[in-house]
Image 1 (cartoon, one colour):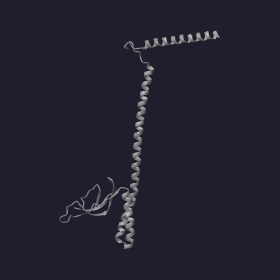
Image 2 (cartoon, rainbow, N blue to C red):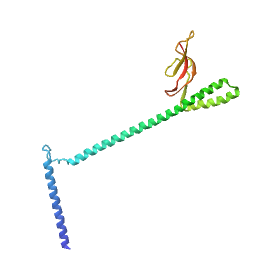
Image 3 (cartoon, rainbow, N blue to C red):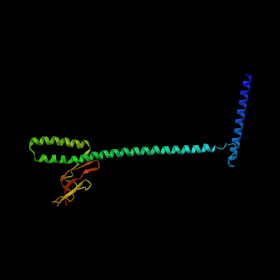
Length: 190
């Protein structure tokens, strides 16, 4: 048993000696590669460690940038989807607007019983528009605004009436917020 113990101790001593020699050789190699201007007492940083730290910082920077780019992409994509959705809804509403125009025309030429039914349908049509945030553009008596109206006729201004005002609306315009869905077609005084 003592032989095993002695051989074990000898193997440990030999391993320690090899480690000590390897450490001494590495220390000599590092001091040979050290720049001359290093202050005494401070060990030179391992070049591999410095390189790895620089790469880690570079990878972290790239990761942070990628996350920021993806977040910006996600926000732009969500905004684009919302805008497309709202424009699609507006396109459908624009196609339905002539139905409302025809209902208003029908009110002028029908009997009383039919008139009540058409008025009910017209109220629900206007409620639909209101629910979508759509407002009528009906500028009778207001100054002509080319941003909301399309002048299709003109008429000389009567005495006491200023030129450039809307005299009659032929077709109502509609807008959602600041976006014009359909320009009002009007007659303007000149």
